Every structure is written in structure tokens, then in C-alpha cells.
Length: 335
Image (cartoon, rainbow, N blue to C red; front, side):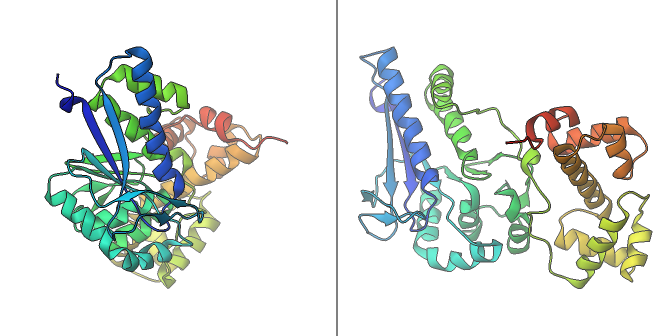
């Protein structure tokens, strides 16, 4: 293998307001991997390069912390991957509003994609890929609390919000900023070798095997649809989660038809009513597992189920953890 074939170039899109860790983390991974490769083989011809790639001709950019980073290059040519970081925001609405400030960056992302450069996005950086039209008809993910805003703005994208990393063709999207670290290790393994990537992950205490955002999703922190029908549905469901609820019951409580209710839930929640009810019941179970000493059977009853075995299966499918594992990992502990 020639020296040129072992030169791997990662470009990080330099954006004002970018989350610092989304830029520094991947760069650190490559630096550590380079050092480990040299320790393993002093004469190695492997070269791992990470550089800040700009869209405005500036030499430095200010991250969300106010710390300026640089130097920023207009190139370089021949990138093996362009990584789009997430940017700091105050709300889901702010994520969308700030897209108007990133016109040059969106154009740069689109231009690199047209050159055949694979593109990855961290956190809300997925909004830039979608805004560039690159994700239409494809699967993607983003930070779980932005799911509703993403679905509204990009209905042509198949959002898989439970997944930590989604790869579809030349485009990869990840959840919140730390999720991209696992993806960079995966990219490193493909470009170099699995052993180097594993050693790097161990040195940096990064678990590349996390595949799901589900254990971390909290509906209490997720943006809710702002619609009178949604509010009626939420109030009714929260009061009656312990009971047997059907679509007809919910439609009647909301003063609408079942067909209209189904259409509303598909549009605003991305799932049918019964699936949303299951989400709410799992969410209640998570809260009770975290904050009480109730037995699982007691929790199941408070969540409107009579069969503990079937609810255990539902819980694991929704969170990727058993109830016992979830309680062990997330229960609140005295200081």
C-alpha cells in the first residue's frame, strides 16, 4: 500500500456557533489514533489529518463557548469525509431560525456532496444536510428532542429518532454531540483497521457500540405539538394512562373523529395514537423506575397494563434495556 493510500483526511465544517466538542472531539480521536499507530509501528506510513474547512474565507470561527478556533482552510481538496457539527440553540424554533444564517455553509455542504465527498452530521447539523436537500427520500436521525421540528420541516426524510447513528448512502447523521465520537471510531476502523479504532476508543473511554438513543429520550423534554387537539389529547392521556384506552376513547375525549385523530397524530407526532400511548406508558415506567422503589409489577399496573411480561417486552423494545437494567443505570441516588 502506498503512502498516498494511507493518508486519510477528515474535514470539519467551521461554523460560528458550533458546539466546540463536536469539532474538538473528532480531531482528538484522530490525533490519539495517529500517536497510537506510531507507537505500534514507528515507521508507519499512516497519516490521519483533521482540518477545519470553511465556507466564508475567514481564518477563524467563534464556537458556541466564544472560544475562537483555527486555522480555517477553504480546502483542502480530496477530503475523505466532511463532518458537519451541531450548533448551539435555545429551542427547536431557534434551530430552524438559525439556518438562515448558515447559507454559505449549506452551499459548501451541497458542493462537497456533488464532488462525491461523504458527509456526516452531528446533532442538529443534520438540519443543514436536510436543508441542502441531501436527505430527501433517505433515512436520518438527529438529537431526540428535535424530532418534531425536524419532521415538520423535512417530511420527505425518514426520521429514525431512536437510532444513535444512521448511515444512508454517502450521508450519515448522528444524535447529540457525543454520538458522533462513536461514528468517527467506526469510520477510523473502516479506513485503517479495527484494532487501531478499538485501542483508540479504550484510551478515550468511548463506547462505539451504543446504537440507540432510546434509553435517554425523555418525552417531558421533547417539544410537544402546539395545537388545541394535541393539548386535549395529552391532558386526557396523562389522566387516564392507568386505564384501558382505545382510539375511539381518545377521539371522543378530543371531540373529533377517529380518522381526523389518526391524521393529526401522523402529522404532528409521526406515529399513530396507540403507538404514542405506548410511548407515554414507557415514559411513566421510566420515571417510576428512576424515582421510586415500587416493584415492576406495581409499576406495570400504574402504566395501564395487566401483563407484566408483555410490558417488559414493550419496555425493552422501546428503550433497548430491560426494566431492571434501566433502573440500575438511571435511578436517582442520594448525594
